[in-house]
Length: 289
Image (cartoon, rainbow, N blue to C red; front, side, top):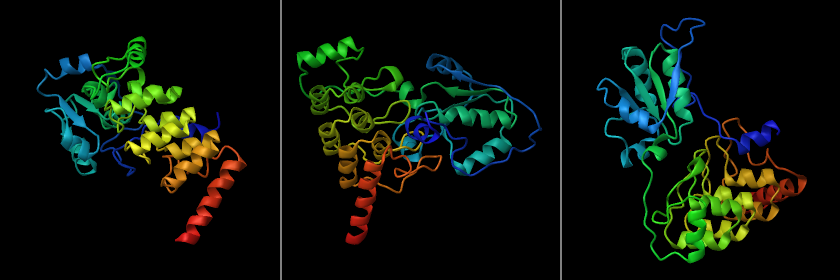
């Protein structure tokens, strides 16, 4: 797999809350500290320790909506102070959305000399899964599919492997009729899997333009960036899906977004056909502007 293709299809964590580099205070050259990934059950046991510092590194809006009652929001403003002034013996447990970025943050705290650093496996979305009843009765076909594939029919937002919902899996498999039924039943389209990909990403994987249309009509975020910064448009470009690329562009996909490695949708074009379509769209819209 090329470096460009990996930038689109693979999620990658970042090392700090922002791209701003922070140098360790009193960091000793060559010092290696340990940090550990812990399960939800282990995290619950750790919270019995009153000295535990629980940090939530999701964005502030998500923190305000829901967070663990013990959690302190970790941001650019307080990160340096915490690293400098917190006793190094204090155990630190960090969670993010899906359990990726918190690993690098645990490493950062370890680099600063903290002796007990932990990252929550699966992140907040695994710790506090959403529960949503179906807004209408589900068909026998959908009920059978949900049960066979390990989903709880009572919860249309139930997650399985890789933190995926039934809607995400159905979209990836191109099971349009069942996916549309899940949408009608009220499953949330804003949810993402462990890699930060939403149902629109999965629909692009299947190449089902009608399903892409239905998801956007239902309010699925068009410019959602996964943990690597890739968007549905970038995926469609990298897969050479000309009709889907054309549809996403006309739907308002942001062509200026880049992955954390700096790749744009134009950079990851799989072939000249999709690249020509992309460039023609840019020219026509530049003239219109």
